[in-house]
Image 1 (cartoon, rainbow, N blue to C red):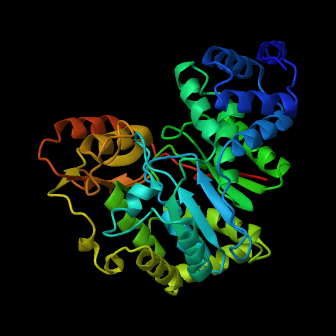
Image 2 (cartoon, rainbow, N blue to C red):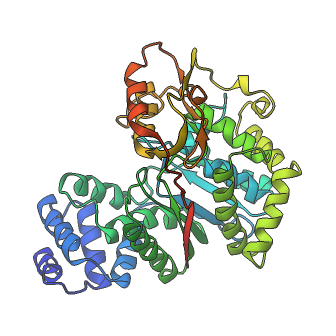
Image 3 (cartoon, helix red, strand yellow):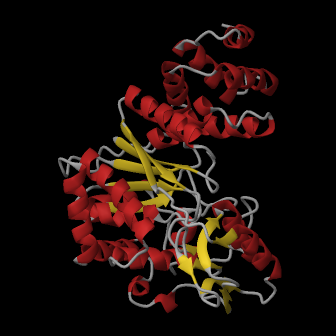
Length: 432
């Protein structure tokens, strides 16, 4: 088999066989296929696309390129959740203990943030002493004991994906639905889950800016998951505005704690319950989404969800006093309220720009090597469609430097108050 022939075949729009896909992934990871030939193939895929069978074969070839996590010693059906990224998205921190409170085993491998999207591991590390680096044995032990553990992803998880992504990044082939889908699903499948719930976001703060693109991505990932024997469900959700009110690591942890006590923002609570309900049904702990949602809602208000979160923090070495004492989280030196300059409805709240404003404070990473400030961020006091009076507090900046003029300028460009009352549909569609 020759790489030249595989490139030519895809260039002409023909489907590649599983054997051809295995050949190219194995050859590339072993450095037998050069970058220039793989670049040519990626561009051919970008223009010609891939069938579901091709995407599934590509996904599994990338899975087999590295370590596959064996979760068979964990009791029950293991359900994973993946979000395509956004601003203020703390759903993992909420739904993991919430779902575990119903006896669903959540063995979660999460990543760090890059750019304006926050990483679950960074947020959890805002809790003093919390360890995300655990041995596989300890990870399994904690899930069997508490139904819950969260750790960092193994470096050897789907290494072919890392190699391909680096090449896509410099060859203008990132925005290819089959390649994005295979990239995401290879890591989820290699992580050992039995079933997968996907939160695919669309809007200003999302990678997929239009609903059509997001739906295409969701449908492709669901098809891949189901084709390879992993029951997969996707929820299409809006990221036109930040999720919840807090943007910034420690601030988002505090908001997650409030939500687990039944006192969280309406949108964050709604999406967390929706995603968690599908996880519970896939784990066969409820027969319907309605039943699952009712039981989860009950645990948000009877103390069981926050108790599970507290046990989870303690088990991974964290200071569980943060549950009742927010001052145990990192604190910013300067708390600066910003007031509305006129009355009206919030008609624009641009998620990615607000995320960039928080990043300017130090809440996010410019590069993988950047050190983030866990204490800083922004809390929004009004969301899309809500009315604000002139002089009301619009948002609050949490900073460790008094020099925030550029942040305020960025925020002013990102928020609009007008006579038009906008509505934001949070949950757009379910794809199974």
